Image (cartoon, rainbow, N blue to C red; front, side, top):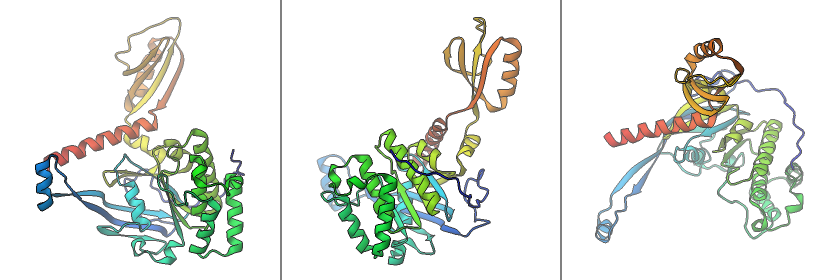
Length: 363
């Protein structure tokens, strides 16, 4: 288990983005990441089914344009831990690849620590790191420590600093005993720890994380979360995280950027998502003395386990419904909760995907 000495530490100034749909320039700090109208589209070959169409395709090919990122604007301050949320194909990973210089944009500009990422300057490469949960950067058949020695040479790390950083990271992640073991013999959680060490050996100022806990069990996820929270607070590095696990986001990030269909739909606090996109509350009522009233006028019944019921109620109607229920019925207990965040985001993704399908159909 990972045992980290957590401490709260001072909070960096933040701009007021809780109710914003797009980021605005920082009022306190110069952004370390600045993105303006960043766009990436791909030309994809449309392969037809059947032998005849396949043969015709050899001489006359048809292509379609796929827009992965559609003109996004984004500012990120130094020391922020920002989550990118979105359904599969929303443009999250493409955005990280653009900011890390792995691919070049179709249009728009981006600056990370004053560098244009896709120019791929060595000075820039030494100051950031990219970790992709489904990609390996370590040699599969070699012990991780051998790959780390290679990183030391590639990044030109001072040897004393390298030894100090490696000792610190292996201690925090409790993997010192595994350094001499071939990577292919490690568990998925152990390999991800090793991948994080490789990414942090040169002490980057910006870290891009793409699904770092994908496929991990609950304990491994928790350990990675603890490490990332502690390390970010200690080093004050800037981290951009994509994840489908809401527990990752809730545990690590105060700011969330929702990307749907290559566009930013929301940029603000995690709690602000519920306020902005959920028009309902969940009211739980426990009736007394075997009382069983009609529930039709209260709202949408989600669950009945008498004498307890859960009802979905419009936000604006909650005071009226509670006043009516408490006046006319014997109640032992009552609770009012927000709709679970996962449900709010899933519904938002479904609605946005439906609108995009309609737009594509009539385009």
